[in-house]
Image (cartoon, rainbow, N blue to C red):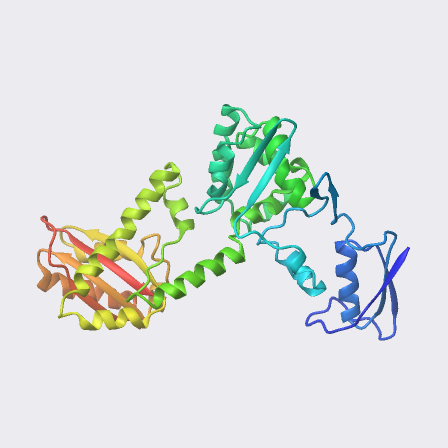
Length: 378
């Protein structure tokens, strides 16, 4: 049996502070034992960690066989596993367990091998191309994978009912038969949760699918920072909102629809910014870190009210109206003299704190519609 004295330290929020000088023995040097020993030591206890094996880590270990390194526990951990990564950092072991820039795992079986590799689309659709070509499943079984993948995205990770529902039952209810659960889904649940899918709770299983890992967010933010230095303004569109709006569309068509929406502000702003009469608009664009986009149209008597109301209700216009401090309105109307004034009044009523820059588009609609493209600064 080996023992390890655990040094003391400080814990900003200790679970319970024991009397100083109290001696505590923690039996078992797995992840739970190590975490408990550190917390006790930081609370002031004199801690000894006991482990029967000559190493710490418990089931989290690896061995080599025929030139292949095999991990036996926690052998897949994702960017969303923040507590595990934090423990590795505190132990000085983070460099020995690097995270891939993008998920890429090889699956081996007698006579077969497959690669599970993520793509540049939002989770859980990022794995669909690899899953649809997974050779250990039949064509019929692969075709049903999208049912579960899309359903994961619609789950509310904060719903307490998820903790009461076994993952296996939920997968079965979404078209995943017994063989598919064993051959595919257990790969993820056993490797990341250390339990078969049928024994795991849905709450734990949803975490990798509903949280885009911090590394991916950091990379995206770094690219946005670079982009902001080179352009007048950045308009962002959330992939999460796309999956809510176009949940019944095939993936390719959903992203094509998003591309058409994204093209609207880019095309319109490019034409407007070339004009000499809207210098304040360009100045305001540069002042705001990030913009959100809304589009609305209205007809007949209350067309201005309807157009602005629809623009504020757009799925990608997520800011609270009363909190906006900057807004840009691009107005298209066959009667710009009267309609522009009414549109601006409607915007000021909803966002009284906002400084508003606006422009009338040169090409009005052929009918009596008013079309409002609204950018809100966040």
